[in-house]
Image (cartoon, rainbow, N blue to C red; front, side, top):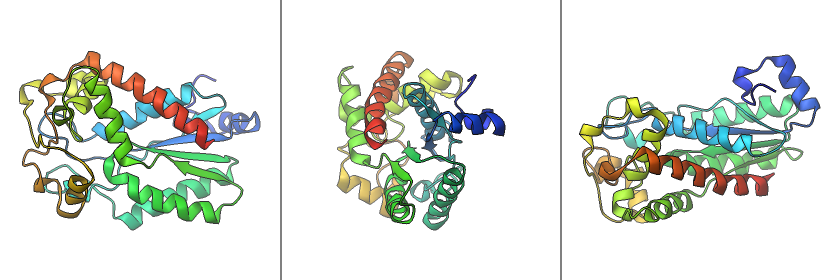
Length: 250
């Protein structure tokens, strides 16, 4: 096949792929939301789309479904440009994806979120769907704090402190965007945001009160030390980590 991205394929080639055993489809779940004054609002969706494309390339008989670009970003609405879905709407989108994809013959439907606000509602709807679709494996990577810790570990190998690496628009996310879309990153606006410890307590505060409860510029971390070179390394490590997770789900 020329591509494993179903949105770039025609229906006949998708049907042939399914008949040839391509029963697994992966879908990134991103967001359109503020990422500080230096990163574009499509940051999570772009990172997720590329991440899932690279994972798909490493797993046999697997296709990539269309990335869900708008999801649960209510906690970022204090900043212009953020677009969010209500949780009920988001879950309805996931249900419709599963309904359609399962109808066409996919038996492994796996969602990979690249935005923190998607992890919990995604887990809720996956649990509901698993009970409904007993002959389809519906799964997803839904451990937000493991995901944050993994990225912090990657930054630590480059000498970056956890407070700098951050959990939103800090060093590691900014490095990833320098690697993927350098022309969209405004380096002269690099500045620290919230540089304290970010754990479950802080995460719950952000989800309940909005990210401005911790940071006025929308950054959790400090992007000053971000580089494209580090971003390429982080992407490679994330892909390898998630390939293992996806294979376990399959």
